Image (tube, rainbow over all chains, first blue to last red; front, side):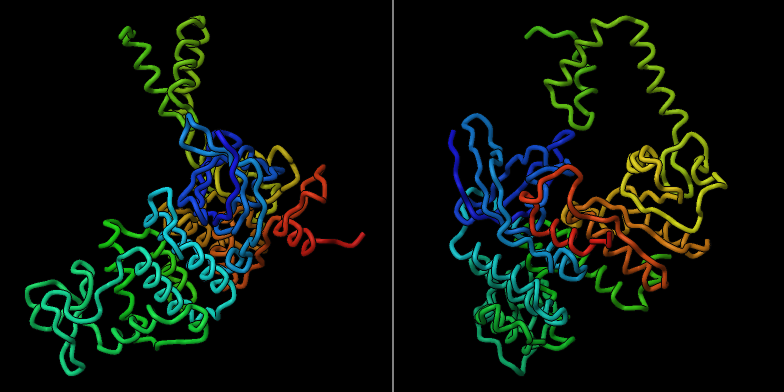
Length: 264
Length: 198
């Protein structure tokens, strides 16, 4: 039984009875935490404004020895990320980001550098031009995967380890965990990808997030790099990231032509 | 372990209800076992009536015993304003306040992509159909003042604005009876944006 203080990012909530909510947080020290915010469903609750995804908060929590869920004692907002919450495109990326963290972080420890990376990404998500968001997200994914030890193998063919030459065809396999040369791709399932797309992947994995705020890789490369969220990440997780579809839905809505398809 | 089969069965059924854990289910089951037969009959009859008579309005999606619901049939209401809410019980809250005289539209939830709730899972298509076929002047978005409610409101607002319809969101700001010193950044910014002349 003890009180402890931590900086945390609000990942999700679920209702608990008539008045309360269970909040899932990513703490800077204690990994993923679940805590009850008493009265958070009430309009006048002192916790309700603070426990909104993806707020950055300073929380005082009470840990009981008997139950696995902690209880909020205090919760102060450090940044509510209103720029994300009030714009649909940014919010769709925000949902995707928190779901990635929810699914990749299982235990009670936060891997080193991960909390800072998520926080940096949220601050950038709030103010980066919308057109650069796909590039920023691909870079975040690769950095997160590197921290967690899941970085895709890009140095050569994942099967025969031979260097990939620019003149030859390259394939990417989410299942195999990296790139495949043309001869190995015959026995393994992979998706044809350009040599440039692989170079961009390496660049995104190694370049600081804030330097990518105004960079665009071009429509063709950005489309090719979708193999990371659509194939690589689901294979590493063993399940789909549900909110990825929402990003696609919002992008379709942004284009006039798709309006009828969505609403008819 | 000692157990009574019928009580266990009832506990199991009660524990399927939302917000009811095993302890609460046990308490309810033992209450039923002690209560009068008349009360038990009334309870069974009430549940049966709900199952047989209550349906969803084919226009607004609210719960009703007649289709269309009495609100959609009411000729005295302002048919040019639609108030969009998440759940059927939100309609009851508005009607209890008695201030809104327009029509409603129930979405059946809010967008929550991490929980698998996407726009396609909500009754947004029905809303767009109503907007296309009726003369609608204004759509009020009365979704919950949280992130999922905001995502839903932003999504619908974007759809409706493309059709040139006036879209408003319920006012958000300081609650009546609260102290200003406890207001957070989000609430205060909403309160400031929504300030009015005196």
